[in-house]
Image (cartoon, rainbow, N blue to C red):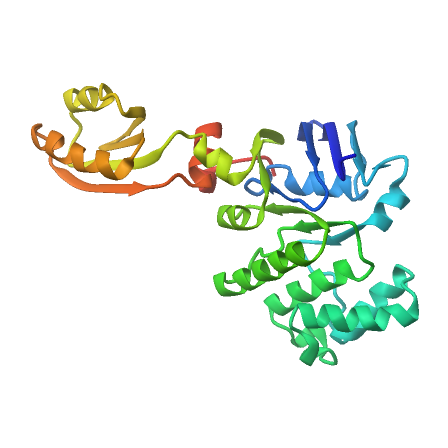
Length: 316
């Protein structure tokens, strides 16, 4: 049985379709990412799976519990870290966790031990008596993760866990999530619009656009399926004869022309880049720059959606 099973899930808000026939499964112990820019439908999916919203149609189950028919059982089985903090800033870190433990009826004799263990895990043991209002954004996010784990959920939902954090703090949060997956069997569903975050943390990712999943697989497989290395050639002007010549080369798998730039997908990119330079020199255009790199998830997004991740305009 899949830990999370989603089939043809739909959510409409009046005449706007926020989630459109979404289907996916998550295995136990897996870190599964929902990728997409703001408004793609990620948070709406999370809200339905955590019983905060009822679907318009479709089905979904978490730990075998139907999200509509057995919503109380779903809530007992999950932990949730929201985009916005729900911590009480007038209370200490310890009391925040203790309050959450009481809400989930964690036995008193177990709660204290768990709280201390979790504060140590997120490196806040020395701040247990400090009021949360004095915490930095990164400290609050770490405490939120500890709060979501206090009742030992089988599934942890992390909705944009590092949004608004600086790169250094973001990587610190990543380290704690990696520690979780290494030392527990918890299943994690992570939403993010940071491509590097998904690439670092997730076993599989689903890319969402306009409420739909356009592709789903491991980050490595998605990048590999693009078919090779990427070479970007920047010229001082366009030359159709040069473009046709490059396109006819047997090792060129894909070619895309954008202004004075030629973007290629090739095998053995380092070797091909060396071969391309003398070829370009036989044509009138001047080579301004050449860049070689391996595919990224941004390239995957571009390939499957037709636009760059950072410039996508999705539903809000």
